[in-house]
Length: 196
Image 1 (cartoon, rainbow, N blue to C red):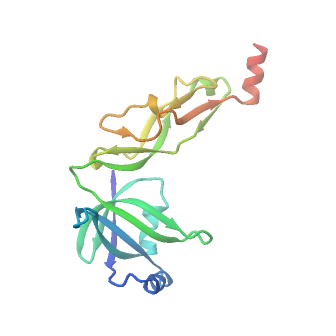
Image 2: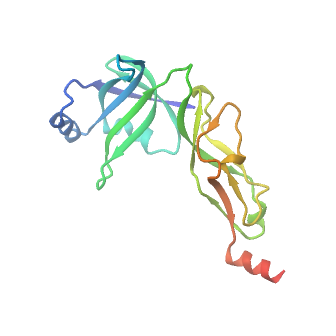
Image 3: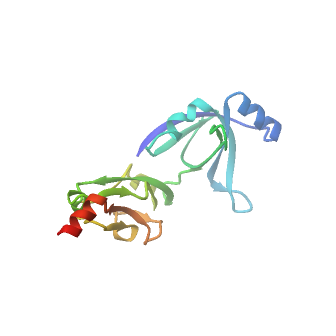
């Protein structure tokens, strides 16, 4: 998995006014949930801010990254957990990160990459990717950048479901019956089937 560096500044004032001021100055409020727990057993959270431009390469990309967060000189390895966007302007309002504990599995979404020429496509069907990303649980250093799915044997009207996929060291968290990809019948393929 690739890594990306993001520099942030610790926030001490967490009020609504301070948050609005941050956004006005083109910064995004963020939180990183650490591996240490507080007295209630919850992850210790560090509040910080990042210039909006500093998040562009992490957010607007099909790739997944380990994020090297440098917050006031302290470096933390983390993964992107959640992003909130403005409902109208589509600007980033807030970002959550989870610190990586190398001994514990993490859950993250990994892009699906279809490989091969499906039999059903050769017969005039159309290949459709239903799930662009799959949720996996694994140690962060075993998570691939992409989950490759071989569609070569896929016939007309057939599907590949999550339950049919297997990757070493990864646990797929999506519903087993969820369709990853399908070869759909096109009008031309239907016509060819009717005439045969």
